[in-house]
Image (cartoon, rainbow, N blue to C red; front, side):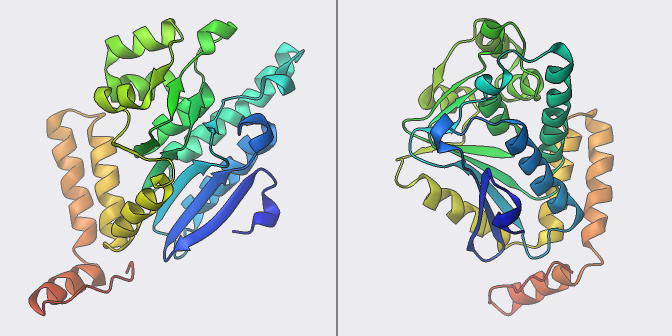
Length: 265
C-alpha cells in the first residue's frame, strides 16, 4: 500500500510482516475528518481483501501529544443534518473495517485519545499507551453519543458500570486508570512506546499466520456466544489449522530444536 494514496496517513513497514499505520494530521491533533476516515476504511478493507506479506498491524498517531482527538469539529461546524449523517456513514464503515480486520491490530496510544480517537483505540485487539496518554469519550458533552463502536467496545473492555460512568459523564481518564480498568495492556515511556509495540507485533508475526488469525477469531467471536457455542467455534477454527504446511513445519521445527519458518500456507 502506497502513501501516495493516503494524504492523512503515513504507512511504513518497520519490520518484516508488520504494517505501521500513523494518523498524520498533527496540526489538528490527528483528529479525523471525512478524508482520514475514508483513508482508514480503505487501508483496513484492503488488508481484509489481500494482506499480502503483512501479518500484524500497529496503529499510532503522529507527533508526541495526541493519538487522535476524535472527529474534526471544525469540519463539522454548521453541517446540515443530511451532511452530518452522510459523513457518519463513512465513519461507520471505517470502524467496521477496523473491527473486522482479520490481522492482529495493536493500538500504540501516544497521547490524547478523545472521542472517536478513544473509540479507535478500543477497537484494536489490545492497547499499549505512553505514560502521558489520556482517554475520554466526550460525545455526550457535545450533544451526541459515541457512534464508532464506543458504547460497545468500552463496555466490553471495562464492564457496564465503568463504561456508563465514563461515557455519561464524559470523563477523562489517565493511562494508569486505563491500565487498572483493563482498556490498556501496558504503559511505556513515550520514547519507548512504538519500539515496544513493534517488538510485540514482531513476536506475533513470527507465529503461524493462519493459526494467529484463527485464534483471534475464536477469542473475539466466542465471547459473543454461549460457552458451548464458543467451544464449537473454537474446534472449527482449530481444524482450519490442521491441513496447513505451517502446522507440519511447527512440529518439525520443535523436534529439530530450531525456529520455525512459517509461510502462511
